[in-house]
Length: 140
Image 1: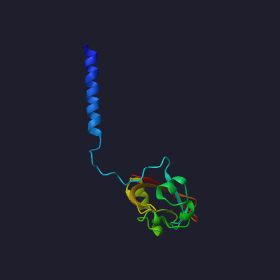
Image 2: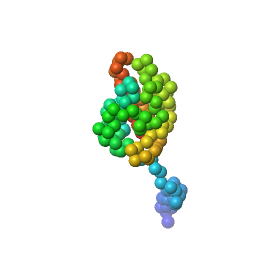
Image 3: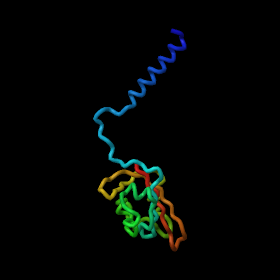
Image 4: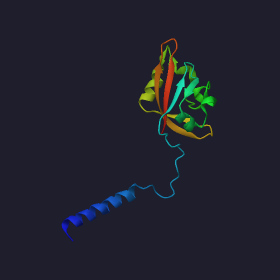
């Protein structure tokens, strides 16, 4: 056997060993986290925390239709978000904005009762008198 063939076989054996080590152990429980949609789930809220609109990815992630979510408080889907505390004086709540920025996980609940952890991104659009909140929800 030539030295090159020997080196290739050794490299293949090491690659096989690494692939074996990376596999999940048998009997490991499956995660209940929903599969991440191809596009992010986006919710548009008014200044009171009521859902004005959502994209199809949000419908799939949470199991509600757009019609069912319209004019419901965001706390239906994200119980930690207290509607009165989303916007303060026309801007995003500084603490909530910080928690979203550092990747804090938030508890989310789907229509079927399944709960899962998610990360949020939050943006406030519009003017001080009529702000809108755009939430991007990513299951983790």
